[in-house]
Image (cartoon, rainbow, N blue to C red; front, side, top):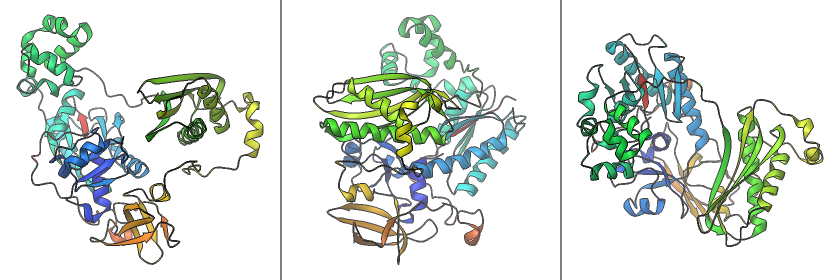
Length: 468
């Protein structure tokens, strides 16, 4: 998918279409999750500190992620991929490999191109968004092709042309070649993929070590025999928070750990899983990171049990000086529970009210109501003015733009943060329902930024492999 999170926000907010949009953590320690192509023109990119992004693009719209909406749209796209083949390997919410040969969707290069073209059309029809497709005979090449196709394009690498296509490309094109490896190769006089192949396997092993040298040489020769793996077993479920200001109060740290444990359990239950090993992660003021774990007698998805275990683990950690990040995870996953083994928590379970899915327990020492209740970019509803989204909040006020994915640019109004007529709302679908035009994007696909070429643009993509 093209600039996925940012594209979702632009599709749902008419006033942001064609504008620079940055999605991520908005606090002092936040980082960019995704940005629109319009923001990339200013040098903003994923994983950049949010403070740096604001300096580069001060007039961009900065929004808090809406992950539940992104997941629901991702599920729509993955269903389309599974219609093409039973072998679909998701890499993230916005990217997957598809073995077209396994599904009979492609017999040769031409039928693969037709399948990719139809997929792009179906994605646009179902989600209102654009995706880019790379077609090749291996996963590595399909990934490279999908990057070259961005935004909103399709690139096919015909069998037999792989070496010629790779040779002039920079070494950073190959998977696993980051800044450090790239600099090491540059100092050795190797800057292109073709020069990697010319250097030979022995020289690469001498420069990079046995494992990395062998792998890099094979990739430079366009060799990649990795199959598309349909199912990846989940190894762990975890949640973590980074705090804008270090937490020094030990009681507050305990409250945060309990809150994270509850969130982790909700994710476990949503996946139909349980786990035996509870893991606590603590990053202290000096960036030192500690992990502690405790293995239970059997798998559980009981919030009281996970909270108790996380609290015991916290007792063994020195938080003097402050904490900047906390995380709670569960490993040793299973699809069943053994609640009879956890009698120590029975009393707690009996007294606990049933939790509503997706609700967050109240936080002590939490930020101001404006920050807690009205995150930028999230949906709200006013009893008279209807659906809108939060442009910003502070000083006891919240500013809302009233528009929907199916409307024109909406008007802006400001309210007190405790205005009883203003409430949080669920996101609206990006594609209109039957009354608004069944299955069709209400406002058409997002326009492509005219200033960007339809090539090397970065980000995830749908990569399809075909072995004619």
